[in-house]
Image (tube, rainbow, N blue to C red):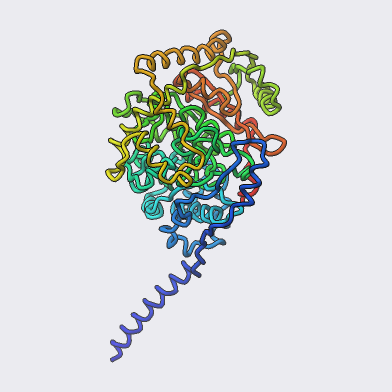
Length: 557
């Protein structure tokens, strides 16, 4: 009898310990937060008073998606993640670069699981609040917390702090990711269960955590003409955290820029055809790299132009940009433009210096006070300034490249990377689909798609246009670079993005400061092909000398 009582006592003790362990680990279940749709009339009316006509909005939130679906599948992971826990972790994460976050994880200040849960909590916190929401995301990875737990089991001493290991990264939603939809923001691709893009596989191989998909300008801003940047039918209107419904978010990698700026992720990947990384990076005070065509694979990315498209990293810090770039380079035999890159970009960054570097400064841009201040800071850091006056020339046929490439490249993407349930085959099919419910699917029209269908440029004419534009654009830069032996030309935001695009020159923008009203601007470095390491060095040197980036004030809590 005594033996039976002893066994019963042990059983009771076991269950009481388990209960106590749960009580200690999960002190109280947190209430779930629900986003509620609201009457947008007054907010939309206010945008009509803005000088920037592209900010005259017709809608804010998507009419085809429920924002609660973004985090619904991950709600159980947040049930015991409290505000106190969030506040405790905040000093280790907000505005911190990757090496610092990795050090905190090695020191035991937080785990990869906590890092992921922190971002999910933060995304829900702001995106569920109609006075602060940025419409910056389309989806979250349903498996990301489980994946983070698996990484927490690995010996932290073996992890390189200059790596993407365990870092939650968002992808622009035109980049294929097999356990999430890849929509390009368009209703016609709402259920596109695409394969992984090449760069997605590279991130996974390097143990990065794909946190989710960022909103974008629908079809990478090649759908409507003169419409707001950052709008997509699936994600709604992306907004700038530095001036919500006041300043443009930049496009087309709008959500990628906004999520990085608002500390919704460690880093993001955007894509650019002409200005689509540089623009949102500048507008949201983050670092954005548009690499030389071929440095990064385009396989598995919804295309505009196989001639000009490229993905690129978008980060808060230059060192993070180099770390992410290291993780996603690689020769891709499926991409004819892809090249092998054997450079350690992190090592290159650490060899930074502005001393004796020669910079071409556009004389006309010196009228901009922030640009002028940036140039003075480079001088103080030992850089040599050469004033230049490049001749602005037209780029005839630029639109033809985009039209004909997309007409050819999009069907190829659908055939090889989209899921079998996507039955639309080409641009014409998409335009017909959009007309069935145009007020919801294309509230700003589809003028660019109509232009694609009307373009009759022949293959021979197109080849001539491409070669001519490359020659014209390279002359625009090289006349000054060669004559003055310049390391880079300095521009503002995406002012020279079109020339860099057709020249196939890399460009990198870094926070330069803020206008009197608080709108961010970026200093953009442009150099000859395959100069990514040099651009990162120069940008890092400038960043260290100035530290211009400031977190958006309404998004620091």
